[in-house]
Image (tube, rainbow, N blue to C red; front, side):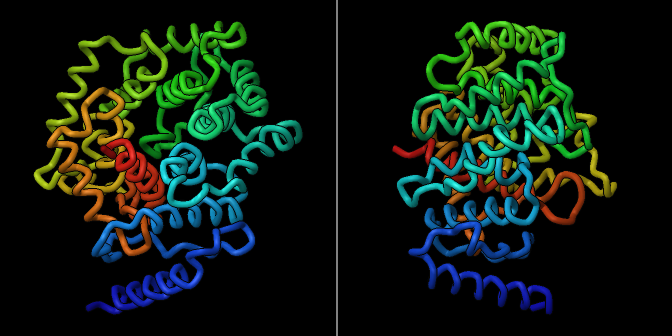
Length: 350
């Protein structure tokens, strides 16, 4: 065993001991510690653990919030839509939700949002969290939506972060689709309200004129369409399901980079080749969840195989590994991969 792998195993062992010692104590901003470095060399667990997955999501989100004091799609924003899937295991942290509510009510007032994209993501995922928790549209979420509509461009889109960090921060199409998803998931039939009417028409107009640039974004559009009717034709949905199943690997999983293949925005900044031949947490969790949103039954043999992959590929820390599609450094996309993994497993329960 190499020195690095030996050190990693020791760190993970200590992390596991800490979890065991404090498994009955919730992770908070006060007691959160940094999760182990995300590494492809992290050992697999011998048995799937939902409590450990929940604790890892808590740790990753709260540590990011405490250290960075910002929201990001791959970690604490993803937490809002994923953590309710494990609410029967342990309650989600309210400190994450409160952080984003404070962002809307305080920081956006002065000095204001960092980017328009921050407003779109916050409004959309707060709405999704409302749907998955209380079932009622929170006044703070409504306030975030109002700000989102004010920032909407005439073409129906928003100014987006196009940093070359796929799949979330590479093109404006992702942002419009996420907005459509959030509005569609918003409780109380918010999408049909007078307040949302013009904005939803703008979203529909943008998506009708701008095709998804990748299979990943087609899948995002299917998810949005499952919550906001009329975004995707039935024949296009069926063609997408077929295309996604064709990419399923023999072990039952999917490689995230295969969903980006052929899209200009998928090029790596380190000029290395994308990983197309190895299943990962994001690819498998995301596609499995999307297939369920597209109406594929949980009893489908291909989905059962995918869930088996997820349950046998959880790492010792409780997360699922996904190689960064940008550069081999932090691999933070693993946090979003873990979010989709737990969503997929929950969506496939009998």
